[in-house]
Length: 225
DNA sequence: ACCCAGGTGGCCC
DNA sequence: GGGCCACATGGG
Image (cartoon, rainbow, N blue to C red; front, side, top):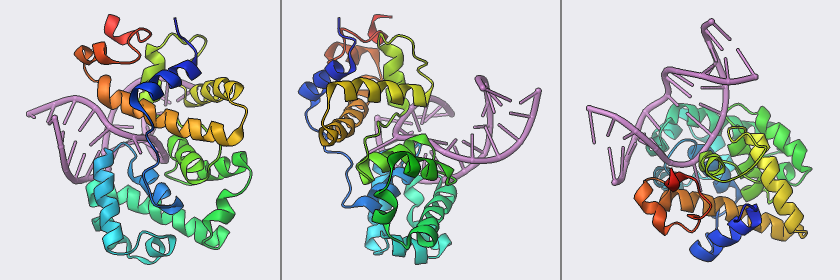
């Protein structure tokens, strides 16, 4: 019986291999992707990002200077484009006013401070903030998403509310950091683990018949019910 | 014609 | 403090 998160990571890694997340050319692109992918299929985000690149405005200055209605039209394929245009504008205006348009100045500080600040920006919740911290800022924060919650509900984890974002994040961080002492290695593991959970969910967690191929079939409660 | 996707915030009780 | 709901597009 396996009920240790590091073992689950190892099972997923041996089965699926390296995922190399986050797919982006630079920090700013990670942040834009994190906002655009809110409750949206990544395929649609790719289209929106490609359109921003075509117009040469996928940069802090670019998003800052483009007309908001123009921005809405460009990110249209990623859905919720009215609020997402507002959220992108919010973020870059904040960086403009408080950090001289310098992302490094913003991200190279104490993790908890950045996290609090990100969460105070309208349109950035737990998952978006933590994706930015981990994948754009290289901070040791574990990203929890709907798939992670679903996985937790199906695994034999004790004493934990699987709908509570912070509880799950703290559990993963506590257990994994106990196994991995080296900070850089831990960050790499967090990046891969989150990506592997997404990969697992997309591949095997939709229909029950898929479960017999799943690398976690022995411990997952889903297919047995 | 549904249902889902790498969420978030606002409103209501 | 928890349960709904709107937000929008594209693919199965």
